[in-house]
Length: 383
Image (spheres, one colour):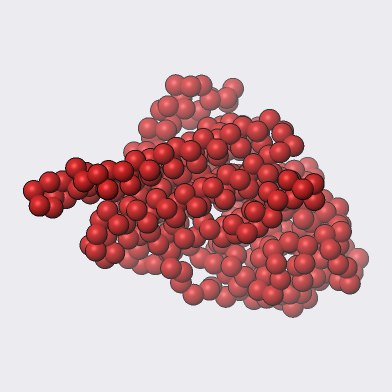
């Protein structure tokens, strides 16, 4: 355990070594099981929780391990070299508490924040809808009657939405438009009037459940609202989206590092016409480009993390820059890494095959490339 006074450098090094050993040992065993069964075992959640890996980034006073955000990202890079569903659990659990804690009352802190950090409850972030963009045009709505909201509408693509205990769900007051009518609600998974369907399997990130939910006047206590009416998107974005985009950028760095590791090993071992592939200039130069791409993305991501942690006004723009750059980097690196493997890399159970599939998901996590470009452009032109 890290000291309650905050992690020391030696402790951080030991923790990084521990995480890497987990990723390369038990993590690979979990990965094989997930790929075989197409499901994340509950034992993986428990194992990650018991090891303290789901509360790395939370402050010590909330029961977390108190890692500074950039140092947490260094560990997230290691987790992201493992199966995408494993890194997804670590990423979500280490971030969603921020969206809740910033606006929580003392009672909500006890009911939602502390149990989420400790692992006693699972919370899914429920913003995306099938017939709306992810933002101020959400259509799910609530009507208030005394101390109860009645929720109607749809959500989909909700990660862990079928497995969770609560949804951190975003809707709007019936009859309103734009962000000023939005509300953020903690909605119990078993709420009457809520119907949950597990969505079909995905190309990559296999095993992670995604839910399609419909609500037919599902009752939600007004006491479960985070912040004031009209500030729902502030809950979604202000304390959550910027660090989450930075974290997704680092997951790209981690997965790219794994692809590069596999490609270097393949190029060193595979011989053609009496020479290892590594002796072929075309292959060596491709991997040199990969190494440069990965390091550049890592440093931009850490720069964005430090700026966000320091309260820089440009952190939101930098987070979009980091994510845009990192996902494009991941596409280039995994494509070259697969090419180094030749045709055999396209077949299961070659590890690069899974890495290549998993890499596509980050392109739309926390906003597509087009969204990131829009955020960056607004900062350029003062929008």
